[in-house]
Image (tube, helix red, strand yellow):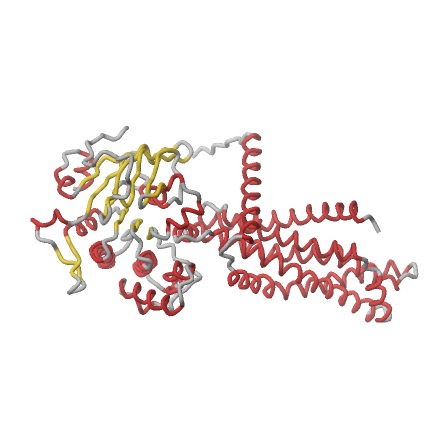
Length: 264
Length: 281
């Protein structure tokens, strides 16, 4: 059997990409608009909050602790050389609250939940369950997408705060137990370095990341075609797309906040 | 090759009042890329009638059902369901209309993470019906399909035939005016198929529901056309030959995206079209 290789026109690729962006934008806008329409599925939102929030807690605890401890460990040796070991609290605090806390939590939840959403909704697509839902007079966007968006945004906000705190605890454990830094000194410097801009940056990011994770997960789920293989493909694409988008958005949000609120 | 055209025994399509029909298609066409699936389809389904829809695999039978529900939009043509024009309605308006139309999907399409009762009660829960009434009506619907014992089971614990019957219970729980059945007996053994045929006849004769039935099994449709439901024995009984004209049952055959036959059992049996003769033989 001869293998025919078909070349895809760059125009077709661009057209497909533009169509995907359009569909994603529509889905996201509809998901947001549904918060102001009835019915609002609070039960489904609570169920998703439990799945996303409580379910992600163990990995967020582990990664938060590890990242804080690693940040302290890696910077301690350099700071020690210049006699600045007392600054370790500031460094861990700033790093965790403004950047690493939201980013690591976002990436962890993206890996766990964007894939989960894409595979769950994708399976419902290939088994005609979404068509059945529409046929039964229920809007899948209201019943499936909006509760996931609400739950992810809400829970990621609190998961990030937990990751920040545990990162600080990890940093304290390393600086106190390995480098003998006074606990009081660590926590005082970690607390005093933070200003409104840092906390604002650290708390606006999980809101945006939560929105990205849930809408990307649902978008790839709803766009699934091609049976079980298609579900697998959607799952992978959802994780890759949401992770990349989180990193890109993170850069631009940081840059925007620097521009609006000023650099430290 | 284009399909041979037959004079279809149906009244001329009215342009005004559509209230006499449960469903009406007018010049409906739909294509996917280059593949024309339905090409200018027109037909009517009167209230209380069951129309069996035949055609080879890929002839667009399931697409036709999805069009009737507004789950797909045609490229051209107009569709009415219960007097309302489906093709001009927004998705939001369609959600309202779909509450009066039931559908049984080919693979049942039960929500696999929900128990049987939750599947059957789905529409009632959405309509915020009180819990006691939900339980009563779910049990009633499950009793209708003789599956009350599966109330607390998951769809994965049921056989294929049982899943179809649960799907029928889900479709009838709100007593819709029209039910669309997509190959409800496909892939099932003869005994289970017969049970499902009996349920469809029961729904037709007891609730007087209009139905569009997609099937590959001609025999099932002939059984429906030659039997009626006897409420006293709770069984389907054969109608004597001379009285079969009273059964509200018709047949429609699709070929190459067009309707090549639309009529009752006698007209179908009397057809001299080669393709139809081959199909029903």
